[in-house]
Image (tube, rainbow, N blue to C red; front, side):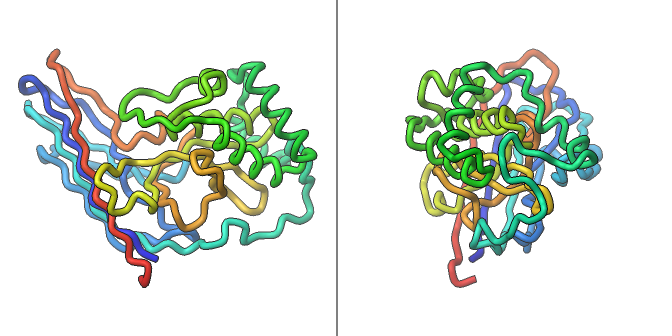
Length: 282
């Protein structure tokens, strides 16, 4: 299956402003789960200069800087991706403990320290994670599947186009949230049980042909010898070929598709358009 996406975002200002350096994280991954066949990124105004970098989570980001005032910043990405992983459980875990709290070898544990950091996780979320672990008999894979399903079952889905994700305890208390809110709750519950987790932004193939399509967010956990694997608490499932991953990070800010600022004191507004087409025979 292939998916083609055209994603346009326009930032319009009350009067011309000076754009400070921006980071664009809009290029989909190309790995064993998905193959990037085509990608094009157009920026208006044209930057004075750009450079590509591979960030701390393997996202290929574009850094751009500008030199003249502009009333608008327009960002259009176009890509085609072939989805490759139809089975989210195409692996066998051997030679390692599968019981929670999850254990990693010392060298791997050190590399994953940031993704397991849980000092910010509330006692309420910790208790919730513990209850899911008990239900799953402290089996890691059962815990991940059950956690995703339970968050999906208990949460009213919201559409919040703007704003940072809520704190995980808020989403848990309010029993509702957007996809990014539920992803943060999933990550924090995992971290409370020693599982390395990170936030992921991208696109959901189920939104193809929808008139109001938007970007999507979910979570990934690190399994020793297997790597990062996705779970979507907004859908209650393990991620396979229905999600196009673009960027990842310990928190949502590090996976933001566009990050930057402007000087000049003007007000701004954002408009977005996403058109997705599926080719199931591809």
